[in-house]
Image (spheres, rainbow, N blue to C red):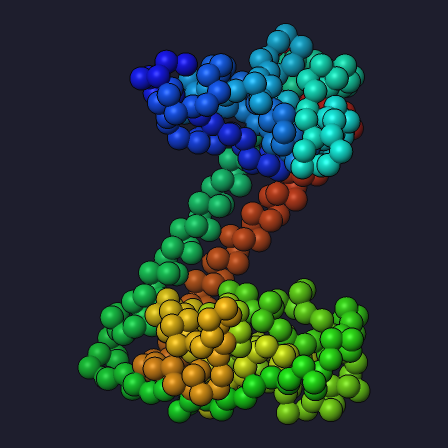
Amino acid sequence: MVDDEEYKLVTVKRARGGVVDRGSFLGRDVLVKSQYLIEPGDFLISKRQIVHGACGLVPDELGGSVVSNEYAVLNGTNEIDLKFLNYLAHSIFFQQTCFHSSIGVHVEKMIFKLDRWLNFEFDLPPLPEQRKIADILSTWDRAIEVSEALLSTARTQKRALMQSLLTGKRRFPEFEGQEWKEVRLGDVCKLQTGPFGSQLKAEEYSTHKDGVAVVMPKALINGSVDFSVCDFIEQERSNDLVKHRLLVGDLLFSRRGDVARTALVTEADGPCICGTGCLRARPSSFRLARFLSKLLQMEFCRSWLEENAVGQTMLNLNTKIIGALPIQVPCENEQEKIVAVFDDVDAQIEEHRLSIEKLRTEKKALMQQLLTGKRRVAINA
């Protein structure tokens, strides 16, 4: 490498995350002076990370980049198409061959030995069939990319709507001129701390889903309660903690740590109680609760909670601090209309998310059939 020349370096992400740009550097700033030129369509294997699935095709825009001998660079032949190989890399057998071709006493320090790997036997279809399979699977990839773009657009639109509708910058015509009321959260909600550790000990928790869920801060995710990460207590034990039972419309706050975590308890959440480490706010109406749940996702609310929390090594909130959170609320009818807009946006987001999930599931099943020969592809003469 020449000191005064600029070179583009790349790396390969784990879990077959693809080849990505590491940036451009002058030759003098690159410690390893012997590098290898890569071209679009080359297949890269990271010798130190292949046990974690670090491999992939070089995209067109990264052609002409360089890599060190920490990577194996594979080129296509008359026996194998590298686009097909890129899909084959997702198979369990491919991953097993990479693991068994690596040496080391710890999984994070294993080194891939290319000569060992090349001795493994793979069952491959004829080259035309490989290309046809790669074309079929790439069609699914494009469909997933389109759905992901639609999902990203919907989420961007939601953020823009939140910024305008939840701050009063954008009003519905029938509410123009009506002032929003400035209040403190404690003025419109009843606040209560969850049970202390002495009231609900760790050994009482279980993972049995037939009990009553205990909602802890880790379950407050993106404004909702994620019950897949909740622990449970026996139904009889929950009767002793009746004042901590959560109702539909309750708002939950993380009392310590990531104090910007909040969630709304909905009808679908089932029986649950407020856990240690959470605070509960019970608004005066469900309509207000839904509006506030959107408002609490705004950056100014999240920042206010973080800035007003106490503690140095770990942030902490209490009912007094949360009750002092300043908010502005419109009349009930405008609250309802704003929430209805977000219901429509959330429905679109969920539709796109489910579409992506379905496409990925179908692609996975198709790969299992095509890459193992269980389903053959007809090649036109």
